[in-house]
Length: 179
Image (cartoon, rainbow, N blue to C red; front, side, top):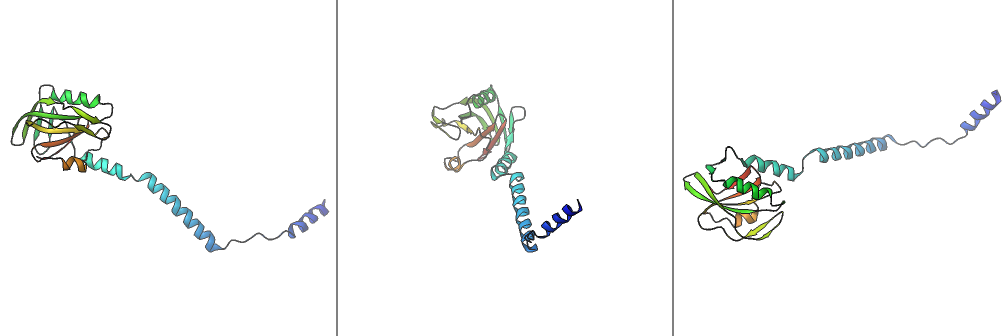
């Protein structure tokens, strides 16, 4: 038995020595792996620009309170106009809608008592093309069912400076422009 153990020790001594990895290579590799993992963690946990834009838009939007939108003025919905608008939003199957809100205005107090849905020429999840609103329209509104409450460049380009334009980006969430 003793001899077998000695024989094994001799055989082990004859094996080539393992390759030694330089310390600078170990440190550099560890640093690169650490930076890669840190990068992956950061891009996973930090919100994308869409999330940041979504949150920014929501912070500037207005939520309904007792059939009223309070922004730079007060918009009050009467005669079931709000319910009609909300129903159109809910039943559009994720497509944009367009509506023309009519009523009366006294300075920055608007009373909406009629809603007109113009003929839709084209509509999908990111756009709506419809016939223009009648001249007595106070608020030209369309929806963004994606929840993005920002006006697109096209929305601003077609703004006529006569009415308020609005985006409905949720059943009870609106973004108004043009007071």
